[in-house]
Structure formats: structure tokens, C-alpha cells
Amino acid sequence: MYICIAKSVPGFESGGCGLVNLGQKNMEESTTLIVRILIGGLLGGLIGFERELRSKEAGFRTHFLVSLGSALFTVISAYGYDTFFRDSMELFRDMHLTEALSFDPSRIAAQIVSGIGFLGAGIIIFQKNAVHGLTTAAGLWVTSAIGISCGMGHYDYAVAATVVVILVLEFMVVLNPYIGTKTLAVSFTTVERGKINEVMYRLESDGINAKLTQLKIKHIESGPQYTADLEIRVRLKGYEKRILALLEDIDGLIVEEKMEV
Image (cartoon, rainbow, N blue to C red; front, top):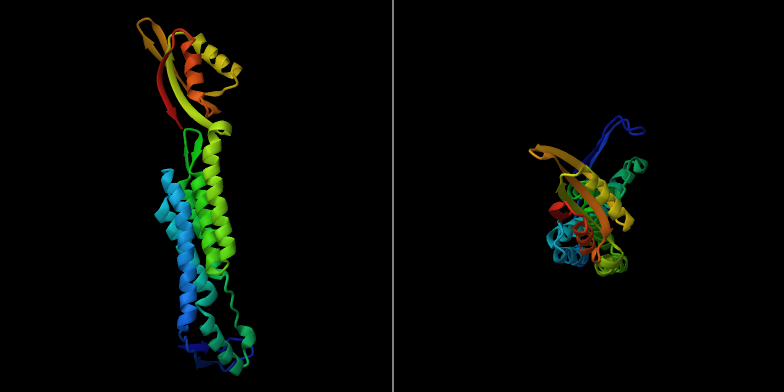
């Protein structure tokens, strides 16, 4: 291809053009780069497989594609223009304009970090005062970093990061029932306004973090009827039995809904 220098370039008022050969990589080098891309995709797929088993929003295909794409962008950024750059340097050297040529192999790869943010933002959901998808979004972010590492040929970093991510995700699944917390949405109806305060007091006295999110008043023949929506944040191990037992001890309550949020 031809590269032309405009007359406006300082030190080269006459302008000029020259032929630059983009060239082709040899087979051995191309095979090495292809292996980097494939390994990046496979390592990302391992994380995605774990997410798939947990029925998360982003599974094997998403993580595989993110890591594969990150590795591909990194390879293109670092090695896709090297022949072009070498031939350009020879042309610019002949023109005595080597200072006018700059090359940054990290520019394309740097945009992966920004681009992955759009995918993460699409996964994170704020619903009923609770945030969902944060771990999956963070997993995609780490997966892209693993792909970049493979693209640069740092397999040791990529494998180590993959192992740590999978171990942490699996370890927390086992540990969560004992140290984790979960939010439970409970809706109940009563005709006595004081029962709502009693429920809140009983839950808080038992160390359960409860929050009244909505209170509806409906007028019926016998008087006002109150429907309260609660968000109860408790530890996972045996949390539902404890809450049901506390609510059953309070007379005049009709529990309408129990669901995890």
C-alpha cells in the first residue's frame, strides 16, 4: 500500500509517497498466535461453565466469547501491524521523518477494558432495593483480563487467575449458607395497625434485619385492613424456618407471599 506525507508535515515541505508492503506472517508465528487466542477462549469457557452450572445470566458462551475476543483484540493490537510498522519505518527513514511516526501496540487492547463495561452494565440489575448480577459482571471483567493475558502470551498469569476465580466462586457457594446473607420479601395482612409494629419488634429482637418497604391500607366493612411489605435480610442457614416460626407466634396475621430477592 502507499503512504503519503502531506506538505504540512514540519520538515517535509515537499511531501511525498512511498510503497509499504503489509506482508504476511510466517506459518509458525501465525500458529502461535492462533493457539493464544484458542487458549484464551478455553480458559474463559471454564469460568463460564461454572456460571452455567449455577444458572447465572452469563454462561459458557458469553465468557468464552469475551475471553476469545479479548485475546484476539490483543493479538491484533500487538502483532497485527508489526510488518506494516517495520516497512513504514524504512519509508520514513528514507524521507528523514522517523520522528513523525508513532506506534502504540496497547491502544486497541486498552479499549477492551472500556468495552467490557457495557456488557457488565447490561447484566447488573437493581430490583426491589437489591442489586443482582454484580458477581457475573465482575466475572466477565476478569475473563476479559484473562483473554488479554493469553493474547500477550502470559499463560501462567491466565491459568493462575482462572484457577483462583473458579475456586473462589465454588468455595463461596459452600460457605454462603453459613456466613452469607439473603433478602427475603414477605407480605402479610392484618386488621390491627399495632401488629405491624409487633412484627418489626419481634424480628429485630431476634437479630433479623427487617425493613418496611410499603404499607397499603384498604377499607373493608369491619374497618381498615393493612398490608405490609417487608424485606428481611438474614443468614441463609435455616433463615426461612426462623421467620415463619416468629410470624406464626403472632396472632391475627395472614402471610401472603414469601420470595427471595
